[in-house]
Image (cartoon, rainbow, N blue to C red; front, side, top):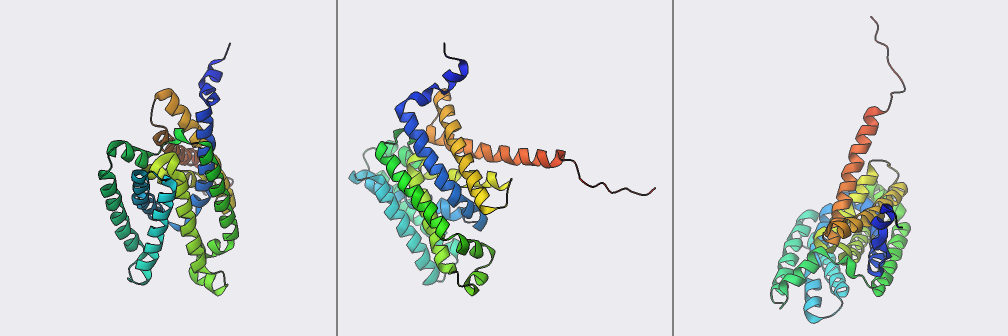
Length: 287
């Protein structure tokens, strides 16, 4: 006779939930590595903008019946290049360039979707993803994306560390701060596009940021923080899928909400641990 615990985890005997877990885990690993740099560099707005910046490409691909990841990738890359052009040629600040393109791309995406015959379904899928619909080919693409992201992060680790400390130091040491910045924007773009299928454009930033923020409460070492963020991200996917199954809630939203909850729990646990930890040295106050 199956135990209650066994029955609680029984949904993962289903093939589509196994694919959802594996695909979500690959996304979590990629987002854990990239999200660590996003948090350290304070680039959350870029991640949010790219998540919505891929909307026109995804919407157009949906209308034309071509793979949405291709459309989303092209749209996100276009936005990344547009930010660079506005910043250099238009002499606008980084956040202003992002803000202008963010609104433009979002508006364009909504306009394209509004001409679709299945507006409500398309909008829901684009905004919140469909992790339960991950197919074997999607697993392969996510594995390639995760491997590529990890390889780029490893190759540019030293330049990214120097860039985080001081771009001038990176330039003096010959570590190519511009190349490092371009690599980081590319990593964020890759993570956002890869995460689209799992949690959609509206919730992707939660999976990108929350595990990295949670890991930052426990370590300052970048490699350790990446590893812990990836582990917490995978845990969020696992728990989120279970919650979605048993509570009959949207899977992508449940995963993203779980990641945020893990971040909050990490903060409270760390604060409690710090408050209860005995002091090593007690200073005696003379009478």
